[in-house]
Length: 181
Image 1 (cartoon, helix red, strand yellow):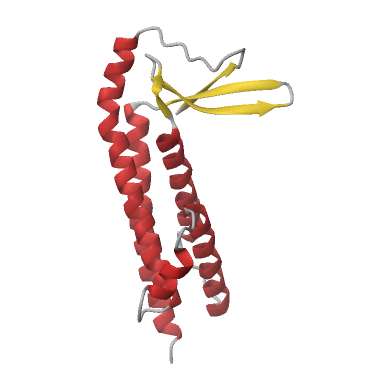
Image 2: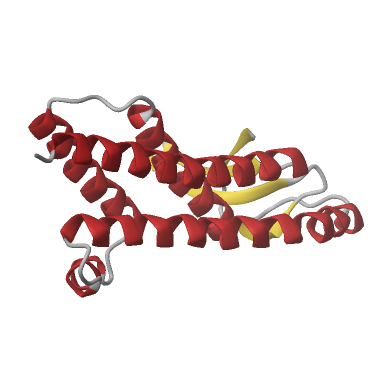
């Protein structure tokens, strides 16, 4: 994904030269945006289930009480703290763990970019308004180019991350059972 910046002038304005071409781009991208939302929600629910099981495998209620209204990033941080405590306590390292944490974070970051983008202000090159940065030397409008390929890459990352989360959990449980007398 490419990033384009534009100096904010007097009004928040987005230049769209060819509205018909921009509309065609959006028509082909909308199903991919929907898949990102759907697959990300599945990833988050998988993370919720695992965190609930960390608390106790008898009932999800304790975990759900803790997770209620918790942001995704906070859930990732909680999962990371529990996992690292487990690794330390059992004196083990699970291959792929650091990559999993990075992928969980990146999935959330990219999902937020997609979901909070101002899709009605997408130009004919596929640049979509995503943010206004307030800097000491003025304000900048940021635009991200979400190509169909980059949206598919986000989908791949999310599904790979969900699979990696399940793999990690299986490896962790195998290690736990090895430690149990």
